[in-house]
Length: 517
Image (cartoon, rainbow, N blue to C red):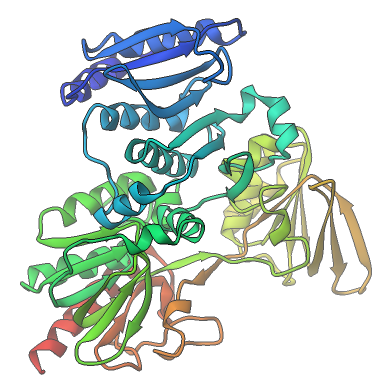
């Protein structure tokens, strides 16, 4: 099942293993069991430190296609239900390596918070193998289980457990359940997961003891292309640099294809993120990943307060927090996220195979989403508020050639309707006739652009009515010694290459600022 190329790569990875990891499969019968057995047999064949056993677990595992990881005969708390192929193959590989002794990819302060949790936490992560947002959540929770024996996590391929999907009313992935109750839906970063756990266990945060960072020359808030460029340029100037970021790469992690980055003919978001990380690794940059900046206290120096409760001083701050998916803001949207309202057609499209869906937004993102969905669902209706679609003509031409794509413009979406926890219809108004219509459908994919991640600096720097941070040609904000760059700012043309240039500019401006102090 696993190709020779994959097996050879696995063999190279397995050489880093320090302890023996056993993949234990629950006994029983299932249509997919033989395929899973062959997969696991091939997987462990690359190393003596990998073993495979089939045995009765007395109810510890869900089904005959559920297996767990044991390290030196001790359960790790990491379970997989289904065959972890597609995007989740890497999750399995990483879990095995970390269970065998490889380092945990979490900030030291976050590791302490997780270790301090003193209640049983049983996570279930419902995924689809086509979901590119799911592995981040899976891998985060796998690390939680390795850090704390009171935590277990099970990755469940929703396609193989339809009755469970129906019972839990799951219509989008990833969907995280904790102790049988819904905990989080959709793309959720480690920082947000930890914040929610801290809310359940506030005492865990107060026990964190990590060495306080010394005063920094530059603190970069955000790890996307703009933030990485700012960090590298600052380090090259010999400045003491710290980056605080939810995740390195930011929104680029969710980009499938990139063909407009000059000198790079074609790449993907994950590939570019890996390149950005590797470039930063060449310099002395302190990276505090999976953390948020809660607030910045103005002064000389500035004080940066983190979501972990820590704080440190910095001479300058560069804000490069990018943007997130914009919401419609209509009734029925937020309360139905994960129940038919989605923002990622690649992730959630397969849940609506053969059904009617809507895409809100007639820009490039909306039309691309419609084209992606058209090969999966029964029909796609695209709703655009303006009288003209904003997408490139080549995309519009492709959409109009599809029999199952309908393009509606000059319409205002009013409400997303649902029954029994599932989206059933979309109410909209024809802006010309003012007539109100209701279209029956099963899902609404929102694709109306991005909104800046700038709420944490509200009142500190000037922002536009859209939340963009106002900057001048040097990346300077209205606050002394605080700079901003990339999609979070007023800079036009939200492009990766533009963000990189703006990050470099902000760094150089911060350097000049320090020299003049």
